[in-house]
Image 1 (cartoon, rainbow, N blue to C red):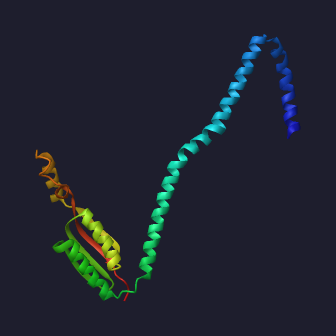
Image 2 (cartoon, rainbow, N blue to C red; image 1 turned 180 degrees about the horizontal axis):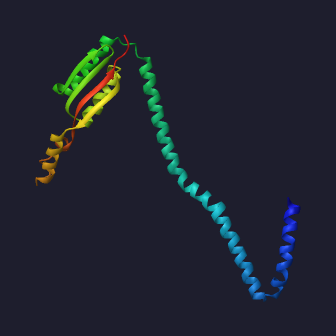
Image 3 (cartoon, rainbow, N blue to C red; image 1 turned 135 degrees about the vertical axis):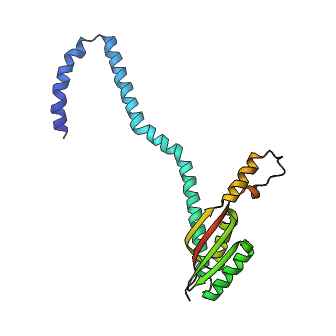
Length: 193
């Protein structure tokens, strides 16, 4: 391979040699410095800049990876705790679902059960309460959501728009009254009998 490079470079260098000799010493020095500068810039852009960029981004990437690792560890611990819990009968799961629903959702919920599935109908439930209810139902009743048909309530949107349009002092409005509410149904799978 070096033989081919030599046979290619030798005629090119011989052709450039008379031109190089014809240049003044100042021009030769300028061209030499230009070639050195071009070589340094190439080394910077190809070798050093990407490496320095990777070093600058490394702490942020490490923090993101650490956060993902922590989340995976928490999920693994949660899965292990769920596996270690004693098996629950379908009747126990249904009682736990009804109790959790009554505690967290009150009268805004209706539950209909057929075989190993329960259909839960919700009316005007805030997103925060809904998320908390889903987490509790998953843990207490071991119910797994299979389908969700939820719609944002138009009434809560209208109330929020009216509150934002009305000029009230800061103490009269609260975030809970401005939160949107959701209605619809969820199908939950209960533990097998």
